[in-house]
Image 1 (cartoon, rainbow, N blue to C red):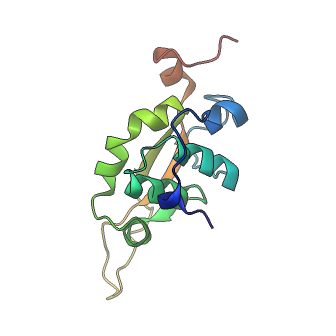
Image 2: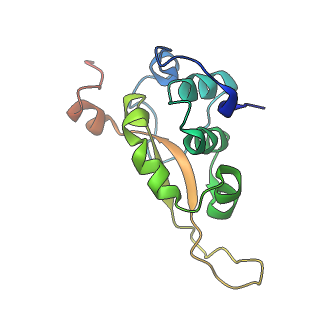
Image 3: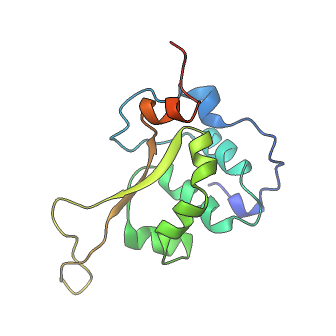
Length: 138
């Protein structure tokens, strides 16, 4: 299990996606999973005070998760604010956090439809990377 809140690694660690995934490659419409070492490298570049984002990335690195599961693991209710605050860090790695609505509403514990969404890590599309100057020259 990763323990991102105990990590004190300096921000000079290379980005995992730069080393292991070509930026913009693959399908940017499907969530990705990361290995434990890729996750550790990604969160090592975050500030030691970015505990919620470290937990968020650790959780999403294993695949897409529903809002309630993210809230409980990250210990936050406003997930979009966390994703927004650290988007530049993820963009520099060729990634972003996105949410999507399920095809059918997820029911809450009382059996009522809820507004919960699925959250995941996604690769940035190639066109976005090229505009940002981070795309491949091929």
